[in-house]
Length: 227
Image (cartoon, rainbow, N blue to C red; front, side, top):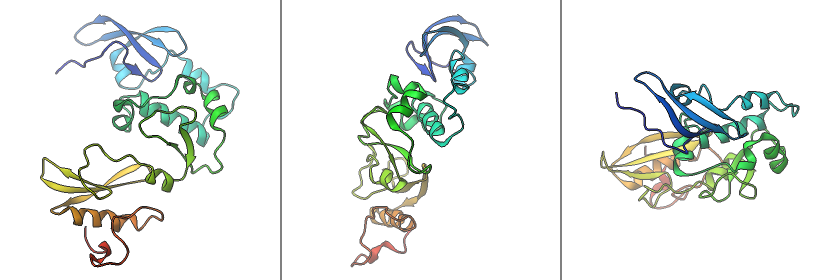
């Protein structure tokens, strides 16, 4: 089995790798600096498995007097940290892996709450205004899913003129997908770019406010059947 590559400065939750201090066949241990300033020695499997992601201050923070642990805003804050800092998070590939970071101030929940305030509706999500910048004061707002979808960055591998469509080099087909409720849904593979665009539209029409590729009526048929 190939050894896991861990580099100095790599982050796991609140812990930043300082150096490897013990390397054996089964157990590798790393010295880490926590965001709170404490130095701790942690087994590699505990880092990569998400078992230990702080010096213990995270558990203490959950018991602080703010009384917001378990609330919707606390959940949004924690999810933000996980997708930016935890390589085992489902969202890490689209956030932390491409350089999206949470500013140091917002690693503490009380600071995040003071800057963002409570959302008017618990269903609102965090939305970065500039998708190339991280989570920081002035670049984050509370937004509906519709606003989030309209503000989504265009995928860098997307060569299509249609929303939700990209070229799959391996299969040599047009791929359609849509992001709903924070999850990306695969809609199928198509021989033509137009059919993939119509497949996106057929699902987007189910959710009010999604931008469509084709008009509701027109000579191309409005994209009502395909996909």
